[in-house]
Length: 172
Image (cartoon, rainbow, N blue to C red):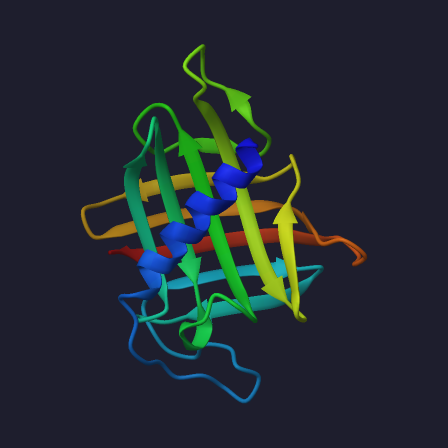
């Protein structure tokens, strides 16, 4: 149940962030090639680098009883092929710290702390395992910066190790 709620909140946050996008430059493989903001990482040792002033966005908000921080890269304005979504949930306000994967109950009120990666590649939707770590290193009024790592999986597909992840996103 909590996974369904979390996925719905992530989807809602991603949809809100997509509403701020307009255009960007890509190379022949569809990778972003311009922009100040980025989400980049190694996927099983291969560099994935989304750079864009339009398609890389972040948001910090309170959703129900949890605070959320979401950073999303959506090449070509679609949360489909080639997107990465980083999400953290906490019953306390989001701050600079490391958030871990797996649901950690936050008390008797049903709150929890969670870090989650959602990666779409090769026409498959990959969700994170409990080994995810998202570290928020800087929060300003206009940007969100940090690092991330973990394993993502999709039914019937080999797991993908996400390493050396870093992000610098504008806040919308």
